[in-house]
Length: 150
Image (cartoon, rainbow, N blue to C red; front, side, top):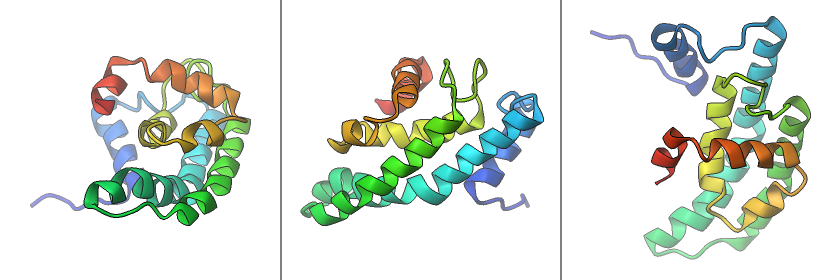
């Protein structure tokens, strides 16, 4: 019988170690810490307002016959902006969040942006994060991201 493993951080770390020989973990301790810092910001401050409020209300509720709760969407914009500003301050965004090598932090944020960019709030939420907008413009062209986004 296999082992049960849950929680995104644990799963991604395990897969990166076992399947990718730590390819998606930066080589320096500082960049490793920055990667974990970005991942923690996403988990603690970005995921809920974006996915559980904006994306759920804009993309899921209407497909289930419901009406978007505009107040929930509106209340989620400022916290999402704050989280992205924090990430913006930690990234160099050229071409990936932590420089020339893709990391798990990129995968974390890609998954959020894939959905967020389908909402009208995307432009407002990312208006003050030019490095993240440039990062998204580039990574969204990757064949793997295009495939997942389709």
